[in-house]
Length: 431
Image (spheres, rainbow, N blue to C red):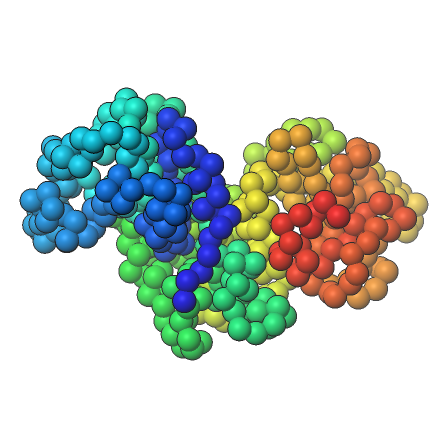
């Protein structure tokens, strides 16, 4: 069964022949290779590009490596990269004709000196280069700088809920429950049974994500790193910082880990796209607050597998899903802080900090969004909109809830939207 990834395919199509190296980044196993070597390759053929003008080369393929006189087994044994001179000679032999050639290069990090090789291809008018990579070195967030400002990044996430539903056999209600539990890694979604999905997720964590972080960063204390990952998994969407996490280690694990080491480990997780951090932003003061931050997992299935599916809190899971959907749509996300003076029951005034779950920015557009698992009564609703009423600008304010409620505005101009409409309709925020 094929899962269409039209959202990302369109991004690649729009970037054809723009004179830049197209770099597809994202967490491992999110579908980068399939996007490039199947979906985009098919598009090129259908748009009239001759097959001999499309060069696909996977650096982890024994068959492909044999074309340039390399051996995958020898590369693994000697722990070296692919010889760039052999690869470049092969490309020269394939690009001697007229017209544009499209290079679709998979697992590019296995090529020695790949940055220099790709920068060399930038100078050739007859080559359009698209690459993916799947280890932590390549997936580092700052990889684009290696191409001297001439890289064009397409960041890919695991399946969105809309993509998930395109292959799910049930209705959207049971679909969301499964999506929250097992996430959107394509190979997991296509597994048949719950046991297969769970085993695949846990194997991915053990054999790929943790191993990549360990190899790249030469982590000495894997136990501490995995303990930190477990703590983050149990507290998605909660404000925290390295100092607070250090105290947790001291209390729970009797560990002397330093906040500096914790900060380093958090950077490792972010660099490999396992988690993302949302920084706090003072909406009235228009200034960022350095710490604490909120951390979200790029895939909920991986998060749930990390804690052996024992701690399934729908409130935080919904918040994580909303965050990922907004990021996939291109928004920069902050956690909003609204300072307010409020009177208590005794009539005394106190200073409080109200929170807006997501301050979403894209160009000149901004949305303030609250994630509310349920709105059972007016008291709960009043609690959710309280921060909104302290914001005096005209940007749209939205509550997203799992309740099946009709989309509509209240007397304060606040839009209520159910989670299904939000996830399944890309223009839902504009209603």
